Image 1 (cartoon, rainbow, N blue to C red):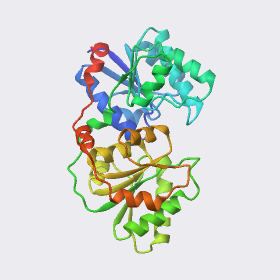
Image 2: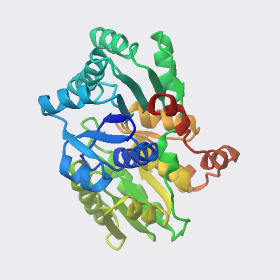
Image 3: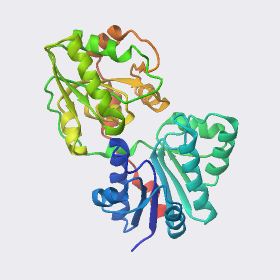
Image 4: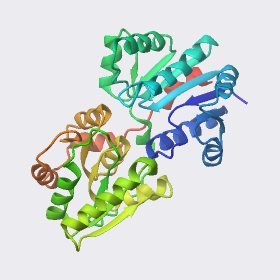
Length: 338
């Protein structure tokens, strides 16, 4: 057996993007003959799904033993080093990294988006801990700029989710909507979005996706109600995916997608679905900026009519085609894993 590798991330919460990255990362590590363990909110489910070891992410003794017993800690992917959603999560992930360095373990920050980190004391602590990491891989140039400003070296990589195997497009002229709870969501956004989707796409089947049931499903059914209120004969379906493959098969039927989650937008870009991101977080804005596509700010009132009109008329350029052929460079990890 090769090295013991411990993964720290947003694991066990049945989130599509984080689960997809864990699946890809664990497959790579197994190919390198590594023994893989992950901190998880649902260790038994993580063990069954990914065929790896798992420890309770909130059990201090599990954390202590997991870090002490590993050779390499991998923190990520996703957006862990930020306090836009709360400072406790930032402190948790920084604590795991600091503990690993205390025990003189190799630490890899894996394909993360960095920031926002609000508050001088949190920025100071984040910089101090990240400077001790052995390898920092960031998934966007905006994160790289933040780290460079802090005097920290990093390497840009594409998001590992670009490596997901997608089914061929089977465009059935469907329109997808993917929403998530967000405390600063503009009060008129969802009703206005339902109104204009009804105006523009009232003759299409509308598929409303829940990518993380604890945050998405209630809003998905609420949005379906608003659509029906605007256009009583519109055809709708709320989709709670059974697996990654099921979700990607459903995405393959779409012509358009309105999406809040980062990986929903990314998969639409990968599969050639015309997408209008609804940015609730800087990572979604950064992805839209990277591809030079329009986006709606979730916390602001927007001209939804104009955005949807422009989306219908949008055509891709060569950049999209080139990006779809890219794959994640797993070799960047080899020095630390082998």
